[in-house]
Image: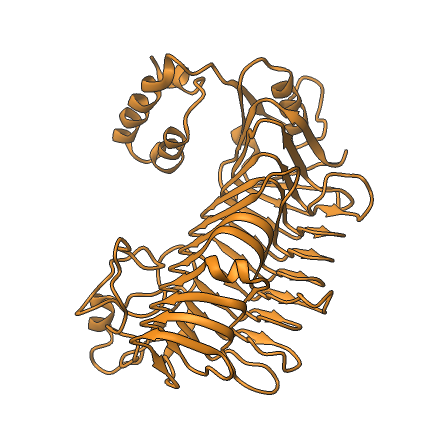
Length: 466
């Protein structure tokens, strides 16, 4: 079976990851991919593959536009449609002049695969969202190698919600995707999930706005189905809302898992209700687990509660764990408190930094209760802390938020920082936010970044790290 023939097979997720990440640069990976595909070729139906060769909507006669390719996929009997792009469209923008593309009652998986997030842009027309995908059988909408921008959802318009992307009763995968410059009149400036699962890998949601919640991402309970959010090596930054959860807002999810990711610079502009806030993340009615792991929550702002994270019911607090993460520089306005984390109930923190969060009246880092272990909290205020081996009223001495390696910006502990070698057992966590080894030295470092030996060698002559 040739490589061309293999690309016509409906690939399982592992095969697709191998193809995306290594195929173009690693000849040995071609054989790995071939083996993976052959293992499933006998029971997997062929995929329908369509190549977009025009930036028009529609383009000239005889060409295939993005809208046409998706429509052809919907008409196909194949269980999977793969949409790719002709090389002539590299460094191009495809503008959807006819408005939002809606795939309703999808009974097929749709994979839209671009050449790279910096090399191809899918733009809305500025008056409707870009793409809506609904399935009654949990089908997959997968986007890779694209920028999605200039979508707008108007409240009450009856058009698919979410400023740019909407998934309903389905799974939305974003791999090497940027969602930016989108606006929602209701919820989900960049992405709206209704009873759906979001999986983001090496993706960015930035510069989006919503009126009521989820400036970047909004996840909701819908049709008896809970949503789920999974972020890995991703960034959610500089999104705004007038409601709650400027970066990420979850209302009725089973799982929220944020791994090796950055939530930064998101802003709640004004209060909408008594549970407003959560500049970086807002969680309401989280049922199974909210895990923030090897991640940074920094420089977010809430008009009211929880500049960094707002946990707005005891259920969400109870299932929330902040492990080997850094929560710093977040702001909550007008003296409400919980500048770093606002919790109704008790959340857990292990080997994490919660420090230097502030508002105009004080610098209290937490509001509510935390069961903490090997965690540095600079200012407890009226909060309650239980647990052992914690550090209080000590500055963590971190450098600036900058590129220190890995997929996202991070804070590197300075030489002499009290967080170095002060963390608890890393257990199965063998890497930090940068995907570099953990632990290094006598114990793990507290926070999302593990200072490496090479970094100590670079600065061994007394030059300060940042």
